[in-house]
Length: 315
Ligand SMILES: NCCC[C@H](NC(=O)CCC(=O)O)C(=O)O
Ligand SMILES: NC(=O)OP(=O)(O)O
Image (cartoon, rainbow, N blue to C red; front, side, top):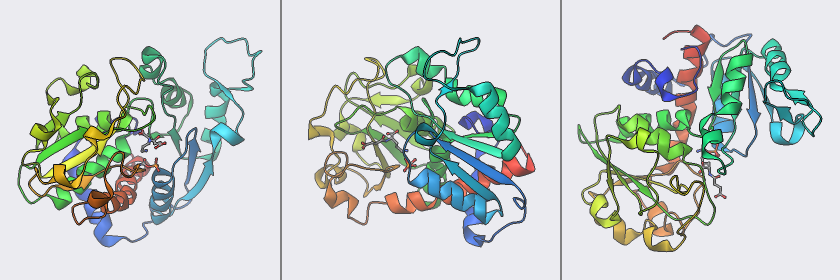
């Protein structure tokens, strides 16, 4: 693995899942990261990604530097050939090259603006870091994907499933703000690589990018989709069709205890942070069915498995 930008950087998903589960059992510090430095740049807030990736790096013996790039760094120019007479003080060409002098791996979080679909899909921030850095780059959630989260989700389902081929439902849920499609995009991608009966439930107008979901059944009736589910992954996303819009904020799609009764006593997943009683009701989050904390704990092992691959530059 030379970078971890999208799930397609993983050659053998099952092997990586098994490695992460082995790391979880051992939980020992390795030597592979000794004398190496991870630099993490955040253009958006984070709790889990920031701390689990730092923990993972330290478990491998790495040093870690973290920067809130949106607040503490110079505003970056990404356009080639720009006359830099605006508020942007530094070009990505210098910034990425300089960071590569201090870090052996660079990790970046940069959400979409949710205004211009083409611009977000161009993944300018992540791709520019990849282009101008001379060290591996990790995606910590970008405009269109969250591959560390999706790897965690695949690990969690592999670990907790009791059926060989579980039914997994990704259901949209309401939220007061317009959120990225990054998490559901990557989850839909990873589920198509696992042995699962995978369906997506979302209201009309909320279909995800059809390129990503082209082989997935999409159901607009949440109750029907939830029937006999073994796992329910709950997540809000803003409209892809009316790009970046939050069209529906009523709570009819909130995952409640009554809705959960339609499932096969499903395990409930969410990447967190979650807005209680908007996305998922208290009675569900506080029940035995919720595995969201277990899921968050697996972030460390997903990050550890990826960092180790990049340090060893193994496929
Ligand atoms: N990294 C996990 C989720 C991050 C982001 N959620 C958020 O921005 C929630 C913000 C709020 O609830 O105000 C998302 O959906 O992609
Ligand atoms: N799930 C996730 O990525 O959480 P943070 O946004 O807190 O990092």
